[in-house]
Length: 324
Image (cartoon, rainbow, N blue to C red; front, side, top):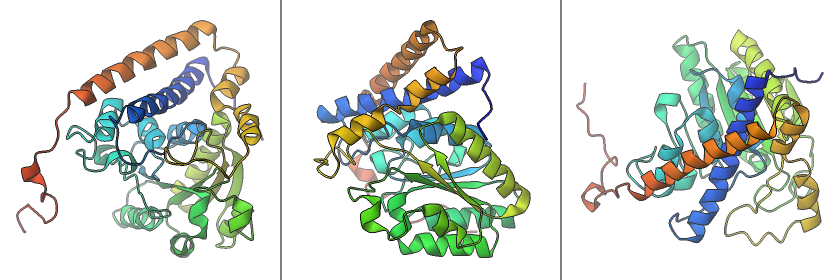
């Protein structure tokens, strides 16, 4: 079943969000090369349809747990770009107070719970969040993003088992970009049909074209409806591809340039434009101008931001509030 055609307004919103993520990541490359962003940097270029499509299908009260490649998730969730950029710069105005940086974006008001630098590390907290929400009677879904590399980790199986056993409202969203850090899926997994792994825990599981934002939105919306209605957890394999190396430190010797170029023909931004005839050249130009102005302001704010004083080094190590 094909995804329903979007309205012209919705198509433009999807386009803007994907372009916004793409240009944010490209700006981060420039800033990293200029040593204004430090540490590790994992880019989401090529995978924008997954974050944008998924976030469109989630409700404001739903919880989101992401991976260390999470700039796109944060932006699509609604975390302000200046707040994200300030975190990239290590400024106190950042969404994690400048203490997390690229891999630890966090924004409690939007229920965006990371950013997690450990492969598969977000899976157990997602199960805990879903359990907590159910115990307090909330009508919410916890969406947990992770890469296919996490499927080889023990916490994947533990989390899937508990979520299914307790019929928790968790939506497992596996971003399969084929290479994890730098190892091809078929070289690390004896069973490469990831939906079969999830189905073995007695939960609905299916694959989605992760380069098609409309297909992602439709699949996540359908799955979220089932999870929210008490149907227990669901698993989606979102087949996608990163156009850049694993990180800025990665020499990318594990895949052929020809393969990367083939996947670039499936660029999610270009596919949306081709699929929706209502997007004009003027629409594209307007989106690019809006995004450029937003990112210029975000970078300026980050550069003008404040560094945390050394006197605060031990803050947040112990509880500072009054005990009840």
